[in-house]
Image 1 (cartoon, rainbow, N blue to C red):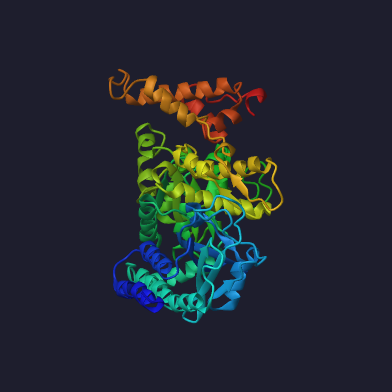
Image 2: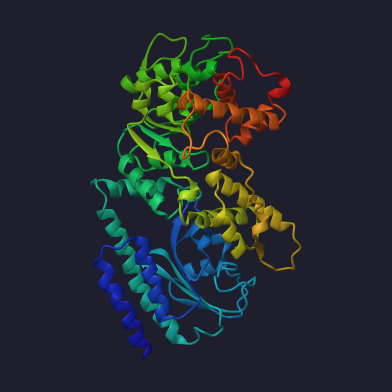
Length: 542
């Protein structure tokens, strides 16, 4: 078969699929598969151009073929990768000489190559032009030098890139048509302009994350109160930021407050503000969070820790939009969208009398459950790649490779601390790997032992105790005292164990329990482990 016939056979299915109802990820996957049919190579990638608010150009991988899965989580700053810069500057298909001194951005990422850095090989790429602008890049690598020699491969890549540009343009237009409201195009453009590339984002391609992102898009345009629930470390604040960024309030303030970190005596001042002399220490007028968030979004993190008295006052604000600074008789009206978050079961808190039912129902008009990392199949490596690339850039490293045993270890771990635990684990692993001696130019490979993934968290201990300790839900009946008392007994046991294990010091005990120290002390009071009026002694307060 001639080269032109091969090209035609690869292009015809792509043309036929332009009007089909394919997901973007599947459309891009087929695009790269067709590219490797036309130009057999060992690795291909489709990358999207993005620009941050500070003017930096970035490339974000949308689809890969023959590269390590964690590549999808990486973001490549063009200024740090001269090959990408050369491709963008060329504006057309470009092949690099096999002896080029330019470092390869895919060092350590080619799936079929275990050595590092990549040996002399063949590499070429092409800019995708959409509406006269550089939309992104197609890149193709072959480990065999000279695979793309001659003019024919470059001509084939240039021809293919024209259809690839049509494919990505079609995918973008179909995505816009699928939106349920007429102004989605304006909101999407607004979101693109006001969200810098460096801002942490909701990464992941799992079914659970796609469902969450659909829910976010559904409710973001409204002013409904949203209650974001999920385990510690799943990224509840990122969900709140995404809701704000995709709303009509995106160009207004996003104000966040951690309700658990506030002393009971200062909660109202922080939320509603105060005037000079309202209380001891009020030396001047001060805006509260509601005023700061006027016409924007107020994010109430750890909302389950608010005192009942404050809940009643917040309920009035949610109903009427009227606030009153401490020490001031006059009310003022605010226009604020409320997003709340918690890792607690607030319905159980209502039944236990720790939360007002009317306040709970006002907050949970549209509940969003953020899935734990262990339920996000395939996302662990994507997130690991994102954190690796950020760490590589921050440390000024040439490249980082996630070895096969490290990938297997990450996939096997339960991640009781979720995404936050993964981020910290990646940073520690890089530091551990840096201690190993390397020859000049050798790529830094991250292996399984660098992660030190041990079942040391309190969540793993809790699982073990549930299997052998308090009572077996499958084989035994609950205690006669009832479910609520059984849960309180279990919480009391965990808190006592954590305090004993850390010399009755609250801060390390709270870290072991993955809680804020103030939250732990409130829980201890409720469980009868600390008198309501008692203050932890200095030796136990740290």
